[in-house]
Length: 246
Ligand SMILES: Nc1ncnc2c1ncn2[C@@H]1O[C@H](COP(=O)(O)OP(=O)(O)O)[C@@H](O)[C@H]1O
Ligand SMILES: [Mg+2]
Image (cartoon, rainbow, N blue to C red; front, top):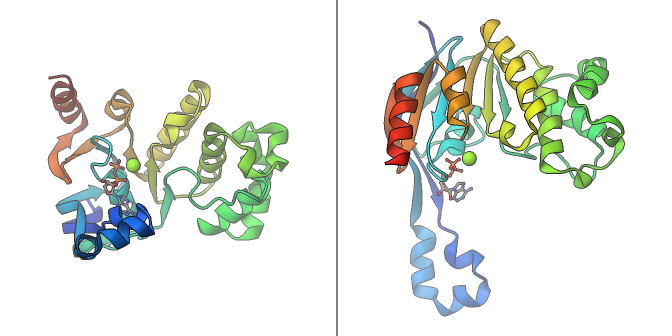
């Protein structure tokens, strides 16, 4: 088994924004505290080590704020760790949080080109696949409307449709399926399964624990910014469900 993603003792922190985002007055009137806080950092992930093997479907579960999206951002290389080492072998196609890589003033069609290029296709390749991508998205005439008129479900359709027509080696999926309707969700699941059959490595973040259990080989459970458990999907999901219900 060949590891294609390796995390070794990875820690990721973010700055605290509390006293800054609360406005200038709050910042000023609490200056000593605020200054102290701007130097303090919030630990989103602490001492994380794991490996993902080639061709594996690897699930990541955990509560809101547990650090799942941060983990995907680190794999995608859009975030850098504070400590530790990350190795990723292969082309990463990230389907990250909603709207990442989209522009609200461009139409759906223009966003397909933008997104496709951001994900490593040439403009010609995107144009060759344009009709297929639009058909998969089922967005119909909305494809020529600006993106700011789209619902979150429509944006997810657009994002997934572009990724579905790439040839990914490592596919990252961050909860994008949750916003689509059930028909489109099933279509996406089928597509992800076909990628899996082709040997694409998949890292799958979802709140739908049944979906994770069904699709994934192994699962990593993050809690309190650390690894709570890692192992066979069935066992970890069972453990997780018991923990959340009890
Ligand atoms: N850009 C950021 N700046 C500051 N804090 C952040 C940032 N992104 C995420 N966080 C914080 O890091 C923690 C983990 O976030 P995230 O990885 O998005 O969790 P999850 O995807 O599991 O819900 C959260 O507490 C969140 O508030
Ligand atoms: Mg998230």
